[in-house]
Amino acid sequence: MPSSEVFHKFKEGKLKSGKSGKTVTDPKQTQAIFLSEKQNEAEHGGHYVSGSERHNPLKGTRRPRS
Image (cartoon, rainbow, N blue to C red; front, side, top):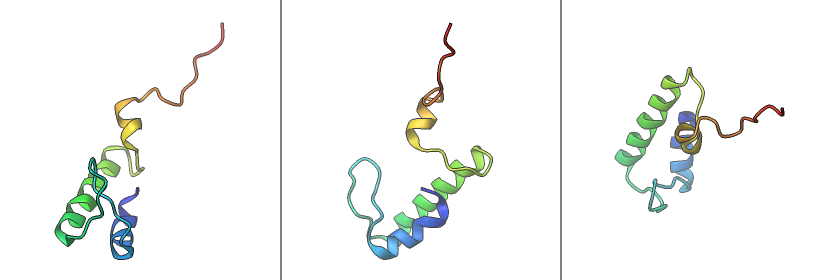
């Protein structure tokens, strides 16, 4: 999710943590998630890149037919 959506989801009560998937209730944890998403965007030229795309950069690309 883009960093601009983190606090909005937190206020709605829909922000989930990473592996456990539990709802985030601590504002400090929200801030940590925000900074992590912001860093992710900075590393990829201002665009959000999901976890699966970070770990598998070839996902979604097609091999040319021979």
